[in-house]
Length: 334
Ligand code: NAI
Image (cartoon, rainbow, N blue to C red):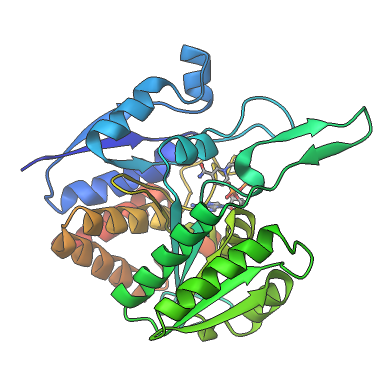
């Protein structure tokens, strides 16, 4: 059986890391027919729309997509194609595993937790306007429906992965209504999943605790913005954005992508770390039921990292993306 998977290579370092992960996936022997589509700036230039209907249709048909990062203009220009994609396909849960690699120099070792970020609302609802010339308003939307389903999803994942604790992050001391509602929904599900230890932590304190004691966490559930910020912070704990995978999951569709952006500062130089993309590919293979090949990819990465010479520049080494990719493939088939 051949899997049909939508492929969005993205821009910046997107094509470099996605091509690397694609090569590794193909080296496992899992048969994939890639449906290649464009989004972001390239699509904007070609179709006048950063997220053409063809992209949405392809993902609706295939149910699974593998995606590279897409640049979003800052302060002006088109609305984020990433945010639109998640909203239009109702990919309500963003799963971001944070796991340290043995042997990779990082602020912490033995880190293993998962951030579950609500993916469709909060300040990302995209509702903002000027109030006169000297003030601007962005509206933060938190609904019971979205909060309940993400909290339920997080508890389910905790059970499925045999994790013991769930930490809900909020700022309900200040945003008593919006974050208060998110917290209320978390507490509701905490009663229904009483085999999982539940705690809630205010986002500022959580930032400090994560930096000091990341080993204390198992599953973290957060509204969109806090989840976004905390996941980059968490990537920093284990060696950086080059090591953190992600999946956007809805009821019957999923889009797998590294958590990092298009990294324009290193784009085109052939030095991006493809590990986040490879890890996202591993999550994708597990999602489609190809656990064996996923396991082999994971073991190959571990073996590559055992040798301190096998590092891209972000981790202090001098391997190029292609060289690193080849080493992973060699370990997998060797
Ligand atoms: P970024 O994640 O692209 O880069 C932050 C820093 O991390 C840079 O110094 C970069 O070189 C480094 N870095 C990131 N990934 C790396 C990798 N695989 N290997 C080595 N170094 C890596 O964040 P930034 O610069 O804030 O965003 C750039 C653009 O990406 C923006 O337009 C942003 O909107 C977009 N973006 C897109 C995302 C997506 O498509 N899902 C997610 C995050 C940002």
